[in-house]
Length: 115
Image (cartoon, rainbow, N blue to C red; front, side, top):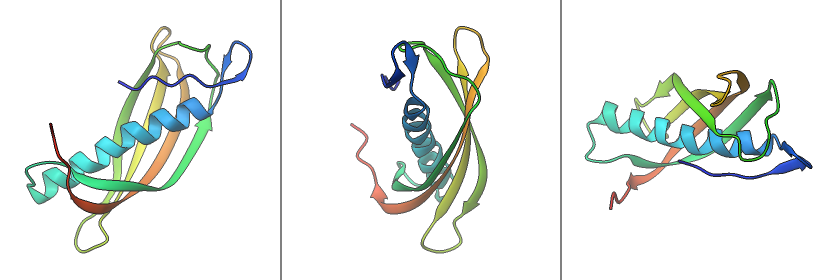
């Protein structure tokens, strides 16, 4: 769970909130995809290479969001491994889509410590 509070205007959550949430959610989707494909014991470290967010609607600060990711592309034949993830962001209260994001990640390190 990621808690991000960014107000663009008083009482309106800023679009940066969507980007931060999408980047964090996409990071795990990309790591898990690479882990599964390479049959690793844990997810590898990845870094965001690009992030594009399209805002559909705004929500109030503190309104819970639901994120769903979908892999668009996984390039894992040789280094640098790359994953492109699409993320749909919805208002948890209304189930209305409030933003869509596309994130590109590149593997930058070995398996993460999973404490």
